[in-house]
Length: 56
Ligand SMILES: [Zn+2]
Image (cartoon, rainbow, N blue to C red):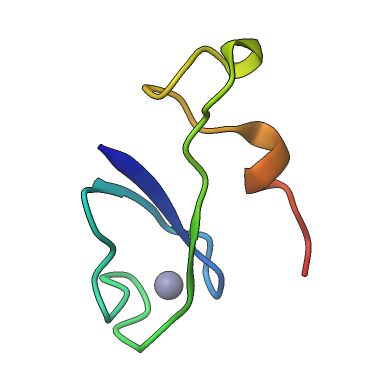
């Protein structure tokens, strides 16, 4: 499963593919894949804090 964060409101969800509309904003948002792929943040069951905190 992939973790997605809405770039607009920060809502995160775990889905194979992100939806077109954010369930929190109810708008068409951009989603960032924030899945952890390195052992430093504990593997794919976790969110990568470096990706999560990234500012535009
Ligand atoms: Zn949102």
